[in-house]
Amino acid sequence: MPPQAGSGAWPEGEKLTGNTVFDVILAILLGLVIWRMSLAVIRMLSTPPTEVDPDDVVSVDQDYTCTVCGAELTMRAVNVQNVQDNAPPRHCREEMVAVWRPS
Ligand SMILES: [Zn+2]
Image 1 (cartoon, rainbow, N blue to C red):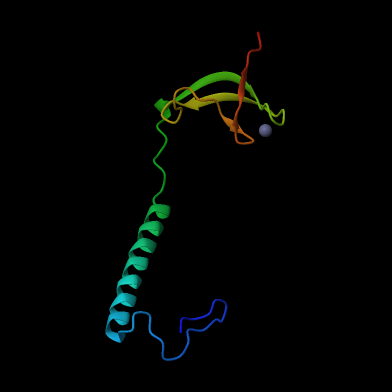
Image 2: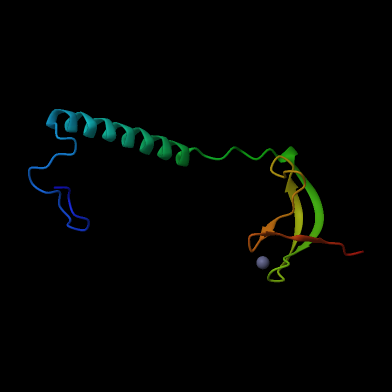
């Protein structure tokens, strides 16, 4: 009889595959896979971001407004390595709109 949903513990005497040796091998393989994936995630998260090259930071003076909430910001500098296709910054999950203000 298969285990009933929500019953909690695995029923006594029942095996996953019906073969104890195969169950142990399967458990070890699953453990190895989980261990390798955990290590890969921890390694990825612990890698520090690359240093900012001062030559990549360019002075700008551009105002942006958020079309959702109305927030405004002024960009004074941008890193040309991080700017993809001159994309504006995002706010409220939307791209902000550049505002032209004659000085
Ligand atoms: Zn906003």
